[in-house]
Amino acid sequence: MDNSINLPDDKPVFSISAAAKLLGISVPTLRMYENEGLIIPHKTKSNQRIYSKKDIDRIQCIRKAIKDKGISINGIKVIYSLIPCWEVINCSKEDRKNCGAYNGGENPCWTYNHPNTTCEHRDCRDCEVYLNYTQCGKIKTLVQNITD
Amino acid sequence: MDNSINLPDDKPVFSISAAAKLLGISVPTLRMYENEGLIIPHKTKSNQRIYSKKDIDRIQCIRKAIKDKGISINGIKVIYSLIPCWEVINCSKEDRKNCGAYNGGENPCWTYNHPNTTCEHRDCRDCEVYLNYTQCGKIKTLVQNITD
DNA sequence: GATAGTTGATAGAAATTTATATCAACATTC
DNA sequence: GAATGTTGATATAAATTTCTATCAACTATC
Image 1 (cartoon, rainbow over the protein chains, first blue to last red):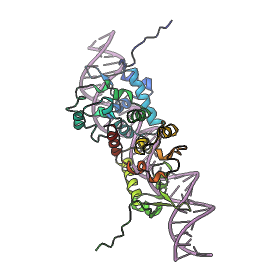
Image 2: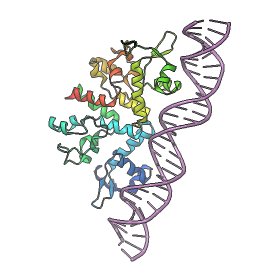
Image 3: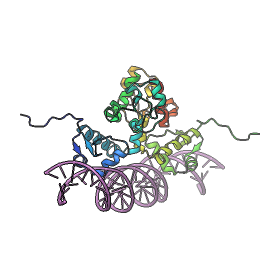
Image 4: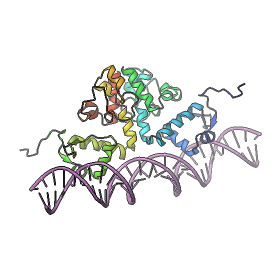
């Protein structure tokens, strides 16, 4: 019999200190990743961060890039910026014209405001672009799929 | 009257020490960039490196990425690996199946051997992929052009 | 209202990456 | 053949990035 609690992976449940413990890093480090635009944790009304299992996995992937692969945080930002988000969400020509991420942006698209685009009122945390392409291998496969 | 010598930019003319002086860096650093797979200098029959003006420009671009943008060398390698080379040279399905760069490679395509592909007997130094996409901005534009 | 945990910010420690100096062996040039 | 410069390799120095400790102020929970 399975007594384990079965929560959806994207449900935010861990406080920042719990997340830090799970990951074996400090709380300020987690805040730093967020300030750099690598992660978007859920926040309560009173501005406290809560992390989901999916968030933890994502951060573990980022750590692997930094620690094992030797990619600097600025490098990860540029790599994220190369995700062809315009194809993933299939936004309009008009949107692309107005989009700072599309037009030469060298930071992850979810770090931009996107005024006057379909992304303006979306929560990037729920966006396929943010959710699906944490690993650089996935980014390459995505580009291959849309160019083949 | 113009007395300056007018050489094609891609003609290798600078020795490694001359190149190092032009760039304001040391000779071992230049060799390191090469060992990491960021550059492919021309070599003489006796294995001595010679650099072209275009090589110098390329290295200056790499230095800017490292020094100004804070991207680590390993990060630059991954970014280069995201160039959709298969589209640039428009290689066959068969080639793609045989290509280590295409299939999950996280290093620049020109650092692979490419056995049993059209690239096998090409000199990557002369390849459009190697020559044209030094800057990450250009890579993004390339992806945009082929997906639009 | 008291305890425990959070917030953002700063400053400093730790770790890692980047760059250089040096070496003996070989190549080039005169 | 002598002087200069190159090769690859190793070891060390310099620079930078990554991470953490600490702070006062605020929030949550009991």
